[in-house]
Length: 80
Length: 80
Image (cartoon, rainbow over all chains, first blue to last red; front, top):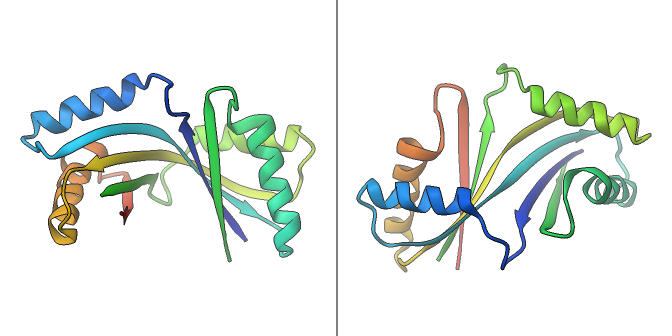
């Protein structure tokens, strides 16, 4: 099973990387772009077939290691 | 419309960040974790309601700016 984890800054937290991308996109001549936010994407291969156990592992990883829950949100999908 | 863009290293490209996460996860006592790959996740607000036009904008952004297509793949979803 594979976990696809997305870690994003909470709304309200300044995102200078996102702002830089927004500026660069406009520099490309694309004008109909609004807010841009950059986060992290992490793909984890899990040696676990049980959906509930896999979910517990990913939750623990996100909370204890991958995301700073003061300023970041995490979300994930489990795919076979 | 919002574009959710995932940029990942192509398979075969070394990913030291992913390896570091893998080591840290094992350090947490989680053993049933295999390969870990880190990528980027970018959320873009598009002022565009036409699906095809939005797709064209996102393709251009990914190819010209966000992804280094020599070593990276990109994928995206459009959500309302």
